[in-house]
Image (cartoon, rainbow, N blue to C red):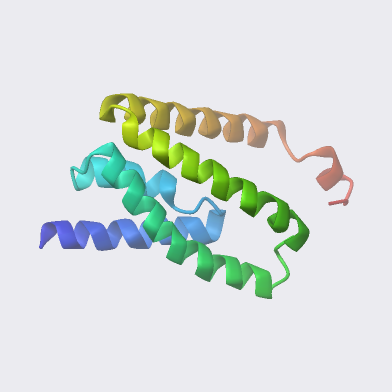
Length: 132
């Protein structure tokens, strides 16, 4: 029962973060499943991606309805993401669990630090000038 409650909490927190921040929830799902549910890295990443399908469809549709989706960008980004996702999933399945965990952790830390530094620098010039 504890794993079920933990999984529900992971889903709620990851889904909320995905919808609010546009991160898809993977930055929440994967570490939480590895640490709290003791899943191996490949299993956590696969489960995370499956959960992100539902999160992405609902949150993406909601943002689209509110005019927050640049459809031409999606037309170019989505096919490339599908091809890259297929290749990366193939590679991830062949990597050792510990190597994959270190790569994942490094990427999460890199982007976290980048976002913190960007936030500390203040708004971008175009946003400060009222542009988009």
